[in-house]
Image (cartoon, rainbow, N blue to C red):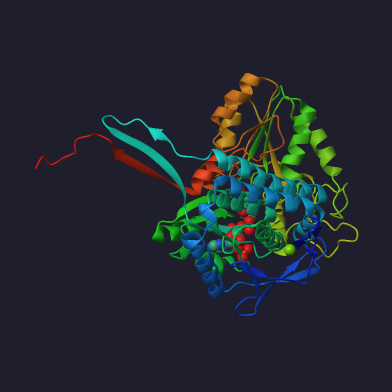
Length: 505
Ligand code: NAP
Ligand code: MG
C-alpha cells in the first residue's frame, strides 16, 4: 500500500493467497519454508497460506525488536510524534475498514456486526492511546530534608504479545497500541487459527511510520515459537490472552527470567437478574451477553441467575428470542451468530452439552450442532440454554467458550452473590436491577474485574479490562495499561550546600 502525491491511498488487496511474517520491517518467508493453512470456519474452505515462524524466525524477531529498542529512535521520539503515528495507524485502518472486516470474517467465521464492532474498536484503541500517552508521566514526591525526588516512566523493553483466535485484530490492538505508545518494541504471535488481520496490522504500522523492528508479527505454533518467546532471555515482558492452563504455564516459565507478565485468561461470568429488573432489557442484554461472537468471548455471561419471582416470565421471553437468532451467511447483516472456530472447539462445546444432558440437565433451546443452509461444511452450534443444573456440574464450573448458557434461580441478594462468586474465575459479571442502591451494593461484592449494571457491553477504549482470581491479572484497554508497559525509575537528588557524610568519617 502506498500513499500517492495527491495523498490518495492506493490499496493493496488485503485478501491474498500468501501472507508473510513481518520481521525487522520486512515481509519474509519462514526460514523453514513451512506454512500454516488458514480456513474459513463458516464454510470450511481454505482462505490462504501463511508463513509459519520457526524458532530461528522468532529469534530474528527478538533480535530486531531488541535492536530497535536498545539502539533505535522510536522510544526517543517526542511523545507527540509517537501519538501522531498511532493516529495514522487508525486513519489507515479506517480507510481500509471494509477490507479488514472482510478478512476478519473470513478468518473467524464471525458475523458482520461483530466484526465491524471489533475492527472499529481496534481503530479507536490506537486513537485512545495516542491521546492517553500524552498524559503518561512520572511524579514529583515529597521527601524530608534537602532531597528532591521525581519519577520517570520508561518503556519496559521488548514485549512478546500472544493473541487468541476469538478477537484476532482487537486483541492485537489491545496489546500493540499501549506498548508502542510507551516506546516498547513488540513481537506479536497471533493464534495459528486466525493469523491474517494481525499481519495486516503489522503492515499498517510500518506504513504509518513505525520504524522497522518495533512491530514484528510472527504467526507460528504456540507450543513452539510462543513458548520460545516466553523463555527467551532477551524478552522483557509477556502479555498473553488465552486459556487459563496456558496462562499458568507461561507464568511459570516467565519466572525463570523474571519477565513482567500480563495475563487475560478464561472466565465463567455470572449475570444476576433481580425481581426489580426491566425484564425486557435484561432478556435482550442476556442474549447478547452469551450469544455475541457465538459465545466465544472470555467475558461471555455463561451463568445466568434469575430471581424466582420473575423466573418464568424471564425464561419464556429469553427462550423465545433465543430461538429467533439467525445463523448463516456471516456477511449478511441480519445474521446474529457466526460460526465456531474449528471442529475441535465444536466437539468441545457439544461434549459439554451432551454430558450435561446425561447428568439430567434440561435443554430449553438448542443443544445440537447446527447446519445452516449453504454452510453445511462449516462449524456451527445452536444457541443453547440449559436448566436443571447445579454448581457441581462441569457445565456450570468450566469455561465452554461457545453459545451455551446455564440458568438457575435464586431467592435473595445474599444467595445471588454467593452463587456469582462460587467460581474459580473472576472476569465479567452483570447485574440487572432498577434499584440503583442494590445494583451498586451487589456490584461491590462481586469478585470480578468487570461488572456491567443494566448494560450488555463489557468494554470500550478507556475502560479497564481484566480478571480477578484465575481469570488473570493486569488490566488492558485503559490508562493503567501504559504502566504495565513501563518501568518506574525513581530519581533522588540532594540539593544541600554541605556535602553529606553518612558514615561520619
Ligand atoms: P490458547 O490455546 O490458550 O491460545 C492462546 C494463544 O497462546 C495462541 O496464540 C496459542 O498459539 C498460544 N499458545 C498456546 N500454547 C502456548 C504455549 N505453551 N506458550 C505460549 N503460547 C502458547 O487459547 P485459545 O484457545 O486460542 O483462546 C481461547 C481462550 O482465551 C479462552 O479460554 C478464553 O477465555 C481466553 N480469552 C481470554 C480473554 C481475556 O481477555 N481474558 C480474551 C479472549 C480469550 P496457537 O494458536 O498456535 O496454539
Ligand atoms: Mg481461520
